[in-house]
Length: 172
Ligand code: FES
Ligand code: FES
Image 1 (cartoon, rainbow, N blue to C red):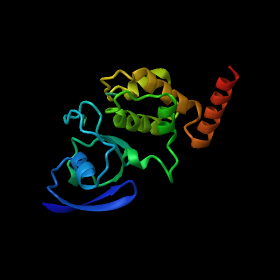
Image 2 (cartoon, protein in one colour):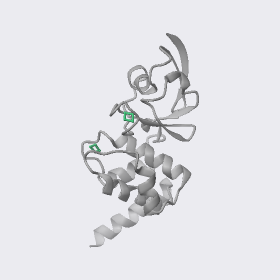
Image 3 (cartoon, helix red, strand yellow):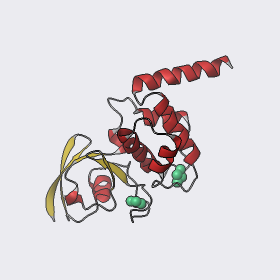
Image 4 (cartoon, rainbow, N blue to C red):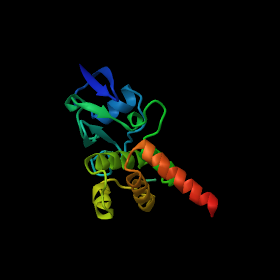
């Protein structure tokens, strides 16, 4: 066991653990975050995804001691009670079915839009291909990402898009 320091969602945590413990276990069991999920435990499904220094990382595969950068989990996307545009778009499009994979879907989409704010349909499909969903929510995931892209991936612009859509619905 040894004490390691983790920077998670802007807060510093010191945990006394076996440094080889997967980061996922520390995030869930020691820090109490429930966004990242244990799916396959083999780096194949994406359910455990977090972002470290801008890079998408499968936390089930990363030893905690190697997580030396700034870690962002699903819980870190909202700011001061305001949902990230991706989270709002997920609600608008009613994306989840069972919900189990959705941490990985949103975090993968976040990493995609951070490196390419205006992806084409093909780029969205390519960027999201590592995040698996047994409930086949892929079409709604795609629609939610496109909704954010249409708002230029900013809360204000997204809100304007949402307001326009609501007005259009009300007029039908
Ligand atoms: S639980 Fe980590 S990739 Fe599946
Ligand atoms: S919503 Fe059920 S696994 Fe994706």
